[in-house]
Picture 1 (cartoon, rainbow, N blue to C red):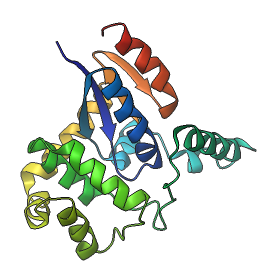
Picture 2: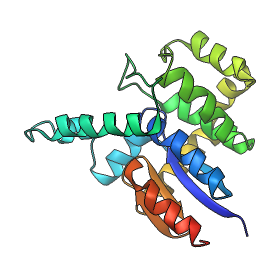
Picture 3: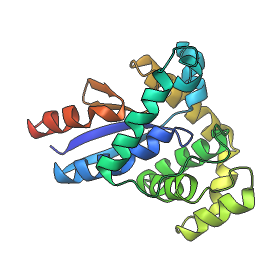
Length: 202
């Protein structure tokens, strides 16, 4: 049976970008498969009482500064030199997430995430511009008009909401959350643990 890693994903999370490429390499190295699970991070926070670390830890002396240090170490370790903090961060990702949900329905979630992560976190894509978002999708080989239309449908809206509810019910509270079977891992720093488990034939 093929080993599978499930990744809870929202484009708004810088850590979704940072974990993506090392996780893709790890999955390939371990001859596993990656399943993208679209979820709305804002909804996850509301359901769990969580908050973005830069907000939650703002009053903790030194904690956010240390988090930035660890981020820079991670970027250096994995050669993520194209990463740039998005000028519109934190942006509203709900439309992107609905389009990702639609792409996942087509079996193209990984490809959609690949393309849009680069556009957002490397090229500073203008999230507020439907034209810019559509052009980025079209350049990656997606039917932008189709995804925009489906993102407005009740089926996709309800599907993303249900997916968000489901990951929270499984124990997720933030991004990146990953599962191998019933084993949950939170944070990009857990890649070594994930590789250890995959190497054991999980």
